[in-house]
Amino acid sequence: MTGVGEPRVPERPLRAAPIPGPRPAKPSGRTRVVLAEVSRRDSRAERTRTELTQQTQVGEALVRGLVRAQLALAVRLSLVVAIGLGGLPWLFAIAPSLGRTTVAGVNLPWLLLGVVSFPFLIAVGWAYVRLAERNEQDFTDLVQRPER
Image 1: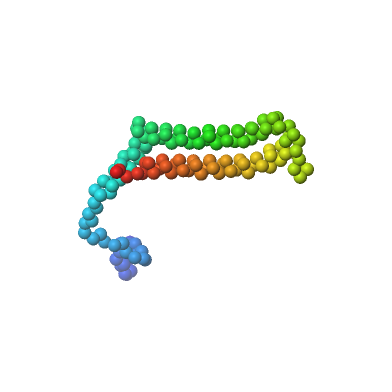
Image 2 (image 1 turned 90 degrees about the vertical axis):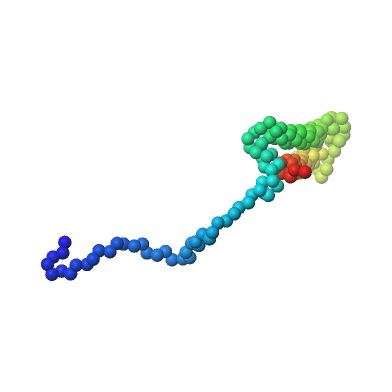
């Protein structure tokens, strides 16, 4: 309330201060999007991906094939390690003189098992990773291969 003799100030609605910066562009007309070429081109790869994600029989067969390939690789390289390291005691049992041989003051069995075995295991591990990645890349190429 205003008293007698006080000037009356009209009330104004509050407005938000303008935001500095670029103004958003106004949409211009209609834009037509055509996806027919894209869907035709990737139809087989998309079908295969769908079969994998929906776990259909075809997708399960593809994944089973990848798992089998990885398992076969792991078994083969495990045999290499078992024969390589497990064969050393047999070698020393068959040729006892080889077991008594010393190199730089260290018995050969200790040298082979304590020093040479680690680079051997690292090499087998490196080969496993490389071959497993190749299996996965082959699987990915199979899934993404365009229809011929």
